[in-house]
Structure formats: C-alpha cells, structure tokens
Amino acid sequence: MDETGHAGFTLTELLITLALAALLAGLAVPAMSRLVDNGRLRGAAEQLTQDLRQARNRALTLQQDVYLSFAAPPGGAWCYGWRAGRRCDCRLQTALPGACRDGAGLQRRDAGDFPRVALHGPRRARVSGLRFAALRGTAEAGSFALQNAAGEVRVIVSPLGRVRACAVSGRVFAPC
Image 1 (cartoon, one colour):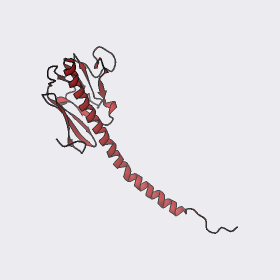
Image 2 (cartoon, rainbow, N blue to C red):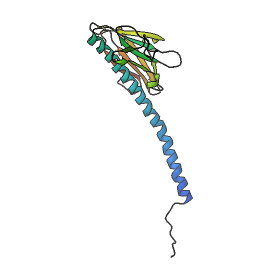
Image 3 (cartoon, helix red, strand yellow):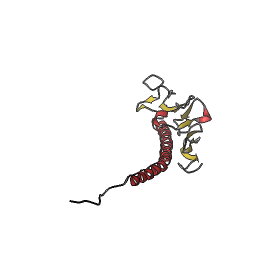
Image 4 (cartoon, rainbow, N blue to C red):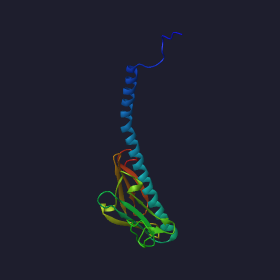
C-alpha cells in the first residue's frame, strides 16, 4: 500500500494556530478581569445594602435599636457588623461579649468576603457606627463607599433609614 497523502498539520500551521490562540487569550484576560471586578463590586454593594436593610428591619421588628459597627484600619482589612440592643465591635469574630452577634447568629462581613474591594464608612472614620432607631427605623444619615478597579459605588443611608446604592464611577449601578 502506497500512501502519498498524509492527513495532518505541518509545523508552520501548528505554530500559526498556537500564535493565534495566544493572541486571543491575551485579549480575553483583561476583559475577564474587568468582568470579575464588576462582579465583586456589585456583589459587595448589594450585600452591604441588603445587610443595612436587614438591620433596619430587625430594629422595627424587635422594637430595639440596632447598632452597626464599622472598622477600616489601614491596610484595607475592613469589617462591618450589627447587633440588636447594644453596640458591638465587628473586629471581634468570636462569641466574645462585644461581638456583633444576636439571636440569629454572627452578623458581620469583612474584606475576606469581597477580595480587592475597599470599603470606606461614614465620615471615612477608622472605627465608627450607625444606629437604626427602634421607633420608625430612622437612622443617622451617612454613606459608605465601595471601590475597586471597576469603579466606585456609594451606599447611602437616609435620615429616614432608607438605603440605596448608586455609582460614582463605573457602570455597576445607576449614576448618583
């Protein structure tokens, strides 16, 4: 049997194919990175908004003040947490007396939940708090800023206790 036509690729064809695949992968990585950053920023903003609304609802349901603790020490290791009845410290992660824990369990989030997302709290303080009043769910007005490579989102708490999120930069939410 004489086979003169072999099916296969030449070395040149294989190298061209690999070069095109590398070029397409190089174009896809930055786009994927932006997609991941957008997702992280959106997730962090939605979680903070939901947690603030839950804290307000808890104050109205239990008819107790709910205190939100916020800490942003240098280095980006931020945290926030809330507790019904009395103030708490979000930096305490255990069942210590001052931890942000109530009957529903540990109520806290930290920078580990949302990698590469920076959080700045009301008045850009290192340690601060926010209180939702038991009567009518009113709060001290303030805003939180979440930032990463995708942009910046503000989560705003009105004096009436209403919580909303908007984008300062980027396309994650509607503009402020």
